[in-house]
Image (cartoon, rainbow, N blue to C red; front, top):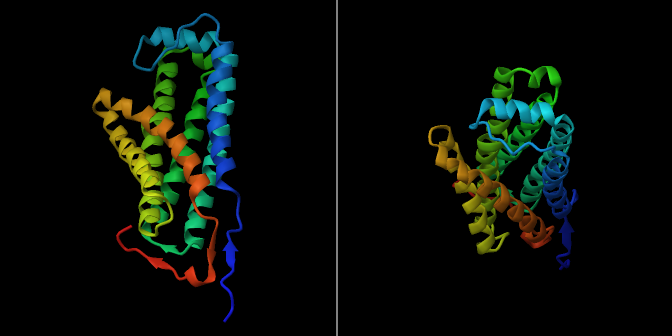
Length: 235
């Protein structure tokens, strides 16, 4: 009888990807905060003229922030492709992997679009117009806020549910993933109810921890005797 030797997944490691994604997002906040010159932080729901003055007076800060934010979309997209590939390698055959793939790619795309809209706001001819600035600022907020959160929630749900039924992750980590998923879907209500915007930072910052922990805990190998596909129609 042949020994059941472990078979390792051939793909990028998840933990470094999660850390790079988190660090790039942090980098998008820190340099911009250091480069701002005297203008208070603004939101798209505030004074339109204050927002226009903010972008007009801080073009370098806006470009630096957009650069790092755009960069964070890349490791998130690679993480998504890798975690779904690993789940399938580990024998998961369920709709949840496709849901996770769609959600992760959509979240990565939302970040990229939000960052590019932010970069455009650094152009003097754009920030000279209050109407154009306000429109782009809202697009930046919506793609990077509710758009990202809803999509990321699908990534968290797809990975967590399939991993639970396949017993690939501890229960507490699955619960954390479902909290992120629920918060992400609640964020969609921000389109009709402003208080739901509070779900966006919950999704984003708990999401950082969840990505890192999944990267550290999801198995990288299986034994030959465990290689049969796991059929899970409900996930």
